[in-house]
Length: 102
Image (tube, rainbow, N blue to C red; front, side):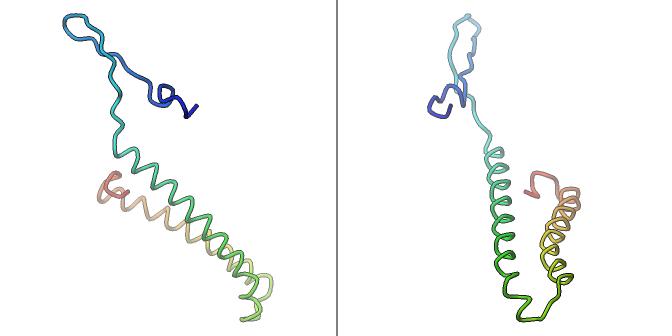
């Protein structure tokens, strides 16, 4: 699929006033690449953060003498922080616009 650029970015035909067809490569917006890069980076950092707390949860209960309840609250606070961060994006996108908030 990715070896053929015709499948990834198909050629479009443009017909001028004389009826001559000309093949034109479509222009991909820079904004699209910015959105895709932001989504990929966010997913990568979320996975990294989850892995970091998973390895830290082995040693934190020993240092602070946490029971199972507090250990669960510690791990779930990472997900709660991600939810609150996503909710804050609503206010930023309303104030300064969706494109500029990315």
